[in-house]
Image (tube, rainbow, N blue to C red; front, top):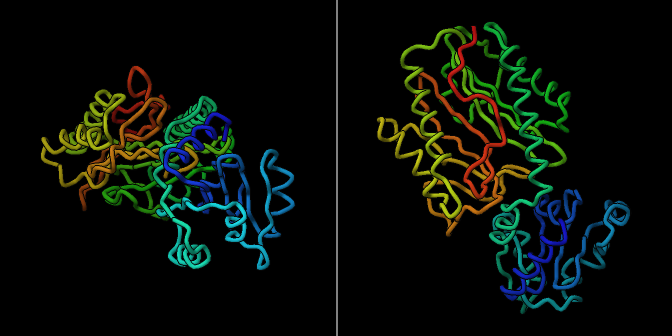
Length: 356
């Protein structure tokens, strides 16, 4: 985390009267410190930043975390002892992540200490990206574009979904990704399942093929979905595709700074509903993208706080129509909110592609 973000976080804690933020969630811990471990604590106070972990991580943390204090915790000196030493009377925890067992341990070991939820605070902090984060996200988007271009030349009727997916994962690394964030390829009637799984199914003539993938570049990912047709599209395939495409373009055009996630979702959802497929749009319009796909903001039909879209937030727009027994279409790009509105981090074409 850069110094500007750290100052911003400390001001948030001050305003909420939180003496110590304690992060257990691995991706939040990495966001705060750049340190990866399966079990550890990141602690932020008004003037200190501490990584508390057991002996497995102690030496490595001291080597790779300049500017951070490293506290060894074990049965003789626990995280609760550390918080008592810090004289923290209000401790912020990640309510959306912490287990009931861990929460009860904090209550039991810190009598008299007020525990509060700082999950929304961290979600908002991660939602607004710095210039460095944006550059990495743009690069991840460019890599994903290259993989999609390769896919269009590579995929053929008769190939197995799993073989195509394996090839694309390998190609993604050749194009500069450290790893795939994820990659799912499904075909035929299975495309009616928003989260269908890639398997050994053979891609057939006439199939919809949906490719949902993300590339990771220097820890930051991308998220893009395209649906293509193997061969000549039927009239119904064209109709469904065009409805989804127009819903996507409408949402991307109308979503501006100050739009709420609920309003953005409605731009696409109302369009799809007006064409008779409202019940076939099975998920929210989008989600935040950053270190993973759990960054804020959320673009959903359920209001979650204010959830107002701000400049430099990065999120997906991904409307879809899913029809069991027929198939489905989803078109997704990752966008950054700018002064001019939504700007895609991808350049891959969105029109219907027929692969012959």
